[in-house]
Image (cartoon, rainbow, N blue to C red):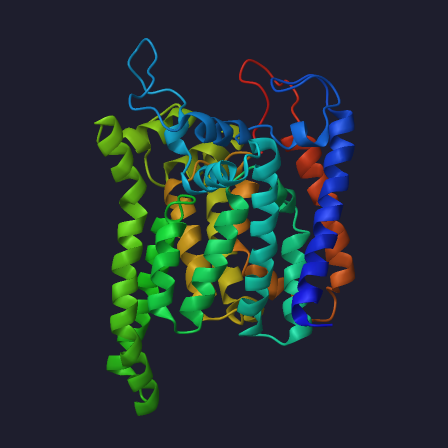
Length: 388
């Protein structure tokens, strides 16, 4: 069969598995803030932040930030980027269909297109069977159910995979508009700009210090387009916070909205020390952080991870650095790791002792646990359930 058919078949299997998991979890769901017990599939997948995207779809963004009695900014739409709800709104205007129909369709269609691009990206470094296995890992990953709900993850995955493929293929100018859209889909503009910066510095170093003249010339030819892509990516990274400033008149509108979910000011890197310390104590928490750092460094040095390629490797390094600096570790962390999808190729690379037929069933079990424990809502106290 043509590779397109094979990739879409693998993707379809993944979506059937996720649908079955959603239906099973929905049948077990009790009353929630969004619906009564045992909601239907369409209602169940519209839980959590789907409601915020739907609110943007219907109302847009507020010109004034809501505040509590103490003047602190409270939860509002500015934390969610505009491309996904804007696309659904445009399709609604063209077709007359509603959010409940269009939003899941856009998510699934974006995820299907992303699977095709991911395959092409993986084929730059692997043969067909391994690249297809990498797509299977992404389609059945423990958080793959998020690819068919009204979240921006599917659209973001499509844009990210496209940007990485274009950069890895040397089409830097074509990657520029994709980088702009990427910066309006989810807060991934900063790590993407960092990744491009790493690639630029690497090319500059090789162009000046490389021992092979041919390699030096090839690297020198990459420096200018990578520099220009870095400028565009950096501008895209700050576009949404600037738009929030212009519309609301508050320079820190976006950051204040994001930190409303934290309940405290943003201090880079600190939450990764505070979160484990709150659970196991300061000393053990510090050991946990050291273990995470050592684990990430060790993983990056593994031959299978290094084999994913220069561009995906730079992205994964930049994204992990971004998460370390700005992410508050909590139950949503598993979903936030989805952009590290290039590592699926490292996992799918054939090796003795870790056959794919063992890995994929484990992924399905973990996906069920993710949907049943995190997507499904269970009251856990005054603050409600842990978010997915």
